Length: 162
Image 1 (cartoon, rainbow, N blue to C red):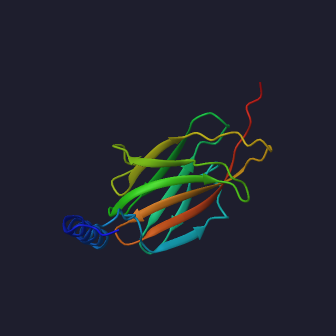
Image 2 (tube, one colour):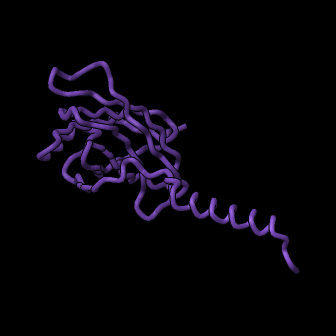
């Protein structure tokens, strides 16, 4: 089949536009794509007392509600002395168990612990694990202007007795 001259020109122009589009359009990039520093926190229970986490760049205190129950909201409190915090998230996961997405963003509070630390807060809610497990990991993600710090803290969740 012989294509007429106009069809060939249109196909060439469309091909050029497609190639230009492919090479010039910038697709959305994860703005938090920064070097990660993962820090397990095994020696502290943030449900019983404030966990103090100290690094060169950060001084963090973390506290959860003492009693956390499935399907009931609970508070997460984080105090930081670094003013260069872009955002803070907390992810709740279980080892070797898929529990869906349980990610919450912490917001800056107007209440400060003192003049040196900024309070960040959120309320979280966790689903019931059908196997009866209650051994969660709370991954606190603190994003600064240069790095992403991930603190992994143990968390125990209780079932509500009916």
